[in-house]
Image: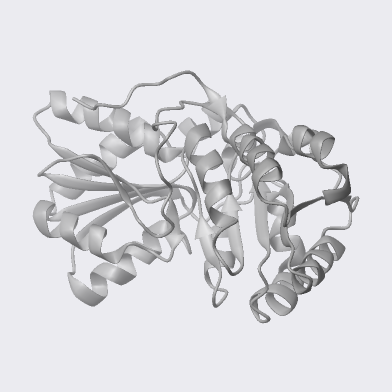
Length: 317
């Protein structure tokens, strides 16, 4: 049913690393900053090839954001990277005052987001970062779905002027998007056309949505799956065009239902085309320690949860 197949599991943080390697070779203005997590961010090759363009800040994330803001004044394009929990909640004041308010051309690149951080537990599993960042005026928020798309997004944001929050993850997940697919900020991607229900997914939940669509198809339910890789600016037209056709929607994200993709979609629908909606997301809770698979199962963030949400929303259609 779907034209997408798993080309082999890879971690999205390695997609970021691959993108940084390419930028190191093609864009001399790109510089990298890291808060003592080089290995986890997969930027070793960038550093080896461009040692003079790398700044190891240490465990001082707030300082890193200030340095990154300053580097933009001289025309550099700083990519400041650390774990998502430290890249947002720990340094929110610095991002707001020094980067967003000042419209600095800083790329905040956040790995180990969501529950799939796994065994490190609730203190590191940030599930509110999308909400924090999308509320900042002028901040672009991107959450790619696999290795290929994360690499493409990393390269694309270097050409975009203005602050960007790029979110990606730790585990190896299905790599299924085309290696040469152009990444357009703010442009949703139709992955599977359908007529009965719209599934709007982001990040790791995109592949799970495609799996759910296959199962639903075997039950005679035609699911339209759209990859919302850019949370802000949101592709309102793609959302409305689909929902006007199907009449109901399920949003799927590895994030709290408060403040995430689902709420952004609900705003669009409430303003233009009120529609029944179900939210596949964490329900105002912190995570816990466990394998990514165990956590996604327990907190209802997988293909089975998406299928259940579809059946529920169809009853309200």
